[in-house]
Image (tube, rainbow, N blue to C red):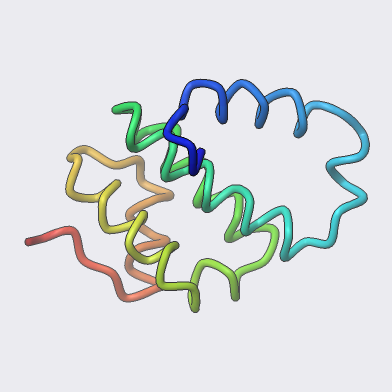
Length: 101
């Protein structure tokens, strides 16, 4: 993703998380990865999937979402994109993030 190829990052993400090894990673690593991939989905114009990744990360390791500035920034971007899912809105309220400019 850092190289700018967000589509490839998403493809690699799907491959990496589809196997059993994904669950062997520490929870914090999985959550951090999901926060990073949420940014890729936002850059590709898919805030719905980005929001789902953030909600999943919160379920895995809440501290990663609630304390990492990157997570809060991504969550704000999902909210600003409009019409977030109810679970994303609840997460934002829990974290104390607002979607207004």
